[in-house]
Image (cartoon, rainbow, N blue to C red; front, side, top):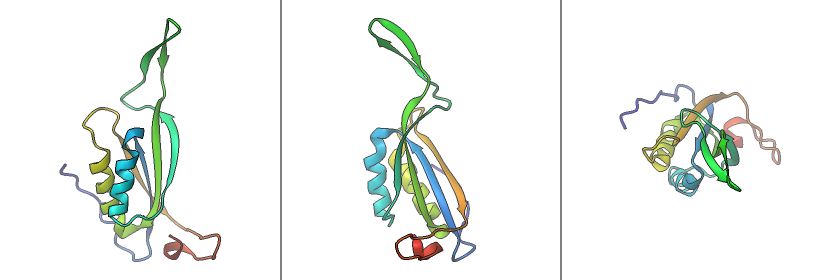
Length: 126
């Protein structure tokens, strides 16, 4: 696809939070692609939203109505910064249909992580 991704590997202990909004039917493909690049855990939520795709019109009991928010799936992944390119590329390849509404990926700095059970911090908690 010719994407030029940023280099996030400037600190060994740097962490990132990746949020991906995708079409629901692509979840299994994305989950498998993430497992293939070593992602062992993620949070998945059913969400609704719209972007350029906007909504659509549906028929219910003979009446037409506008559906503004479309069903999507939100995936949240906390990972080491040096994994970001692999994770983003895996999501893009698995979620891509070429049609409007494929989704978006957001990458954020993650300042701290704590594993509640053990008290492990930051990269060790991931």
